[in-house]
Image (tube, rainbow, N blue to C red; front, side, top):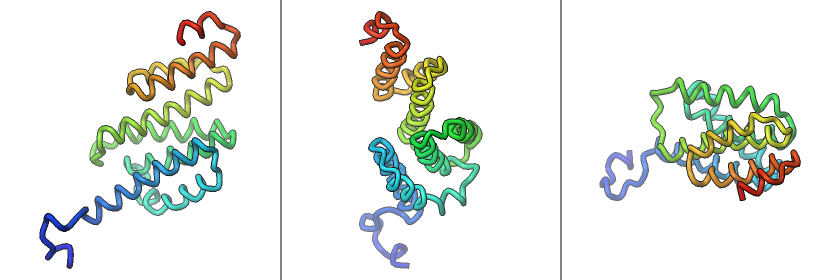
Length: 168
């Protein structure tokens, strides 16, 4: 009730918006923990995200949870499971047109998931990583840099030093 009687300029975020922002923040925390290979922190973040994720299994709100779960699976070497969950991630994104999502948030999440897939493929010397890197080039400058580094590593590991130097 306090929210209803407080002047609009002093209200702050609506409860729903606060929940969404908190969930987004957990996604960013999970990304940071994944990048630093903090498995316990990543598991704890995933656990905190579960209540909202369980309520939104077929909506875009489930996508940050799927991304963090894929990050944990990738770090622990469960690559087949990552591919299956990533497929669900992209299906939800293509199908759900009702859930509002900020364009930048969607772009970052989409690029991060593609980067996980590309990194797994590159580490296994699977040429599919080149397709993922092509997609990352179109997502934005931040991911284009990672894409270029990934391609360099891919070619270097294969012994194609000339191609790797062309990308530097």
